[in-house]
Image (cartoon, rainbow, N blue to C red):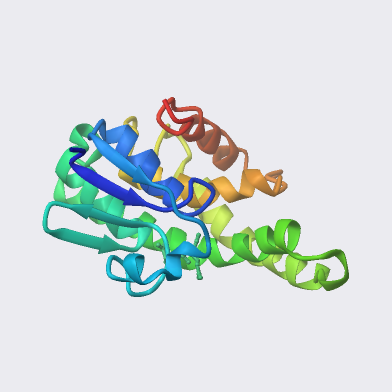
Length: 198
Ligand SMILES: N[C@@H](CCC(=O)N[C@@H](CS)C(=O)NCC(=O)O)C(=O)O
């Protein structure tokens, strides 16, 4: 029996947890869900929020993609987990920063681009989201100067968590002109075999 169970659609935020599990090399079972089945009583016992991803490892049941990934990386990730407490602090920082400063703006663009019928599209909201992203992208670009990855020369869970959010920028072909360091770092992260499902 697989050790870790990950619930969710590969087209959802569950992709983050699946990427992390593959990167860790931990034996895992992927329980595929669609948007309807997250409200099934059976799944609500796993995640009462009715959202994906969720994860079960032994007696532990977790929801929230970033929490799942930080847990998996610490327990099973080897060098994916930072080697110092200071590095851990940075991993928390970039994970929370990704979901608070970046995710909602990218989500606005993703939803408008792929999920909104033509007569309901909101170009103003998309423009505002793109404008709001400029400051955090500049911060990230600055951080990455002279570095391959967020913590230095090694790919860690900080990169995985943030790149899993930033991947939506690729999906919507966000203009990265002026943030070449971010674009290169993102390509580096998303070209990893574990991201591509290997
Ligand atoms: N903050 C949560 C967000 C989870 C979330 O909203 N997941 C979406 C799919 S990407 C979902 O399950 N939506 C179903 C719904 O809201 O009904 C996380 O990062 O895990």
